[in-house]
Amino acid sequence: MGESPDVLLDLNNPIFQDDLLSLAKEDAVRVLAVLRKIKKLQWPQVYKDKGLHWELVQSKTGPKAAHLYTIRLSDKFRALVYREGQFMRFLSLHPDHDTAYS
Image (spheres, rainbow, N blue to C red):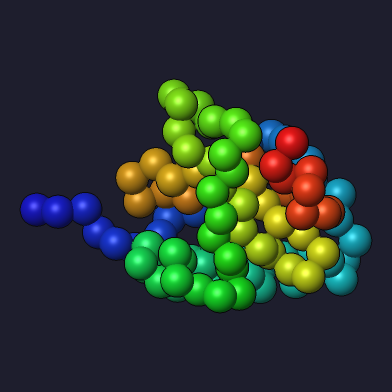
């Protein structure tokens, strides 16, 4: 039996949690809304979604040499993530586009 295309979220990285919990209420509400949206998607939809803007980070790699990506979580924030099986694993939040790539 093949792997399900459903997206599972892993929000357990301590850096991501610190970033998320330090957001102002207005920003947190927006970010959580997008996380809820992602949870309802399947992987092919994530890759195509114009609002998320799934984008490869070529300047660095993640755990076990995984490809890293950024996704748009609001007009102010991008997240650094990687895919591991069904899981989208969140590493950090970035208030501007450029810091997600450096």
